[in-house]
Image 1 (cartoon, helix red, strand yellow):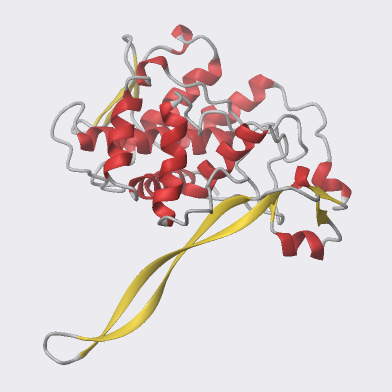
Image 2: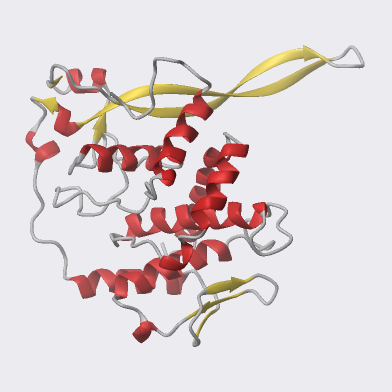
Length: 298
């Protein structure tokens, strides 16, 4: 069955959050292993729709977690109807994964002054998708294995160009990585001090996600007042997710930073206190990733 148990039908926000909390309680960050073996779509990828369009926001986390839990190598997910339309069928006994669709509808209400007021009411809807490894009879490209991937140095070169194009003020030296909001710069240890290049760029992705919170950019503020408070933990979760999204976009493996292990307990507290925050955090992370992509040359 899907990790989001349908039997008790609790609030959808609660179901999603509880699944992620369960992973965190086991010490597993479901956004830290977004690889897809050597599938044609790419060794490391966001989850993809049948059209090749990547999922975004909370659905990235949900499908990465499902892929890790079920050991799927393919990053492509498809609905029952889409499988049929492509000439395929879901194998007997297979259970799908839950993803969500968020939107708004308009409703006219009478205001306190007796005048009609148009209100936008947000809603969340769940639907089911299947990994292509659960589906038989699809066209061959859905199952195709990749040719040998690009040289690692060349792929890192793409990452170097990506972060340079953001225009962030990145300074190197010392043994700490952080973003200083008021002087507005990213501090990074020297490249040579990292175990491997991918860890350097993953750390830079985390700190550059923080960089987007500046008032002149996305103006993201969770009311943080001191190190380690609730607002601090919320911003760190956004940066974790942002780094995961960016690393997937750049084809880089994301290795959890040891110095962030201590955040798990505070994230658990935040998520248990607010069942909707993981949705908000994923949305903030998506906006940060989109902002950074928007700074790239055309």
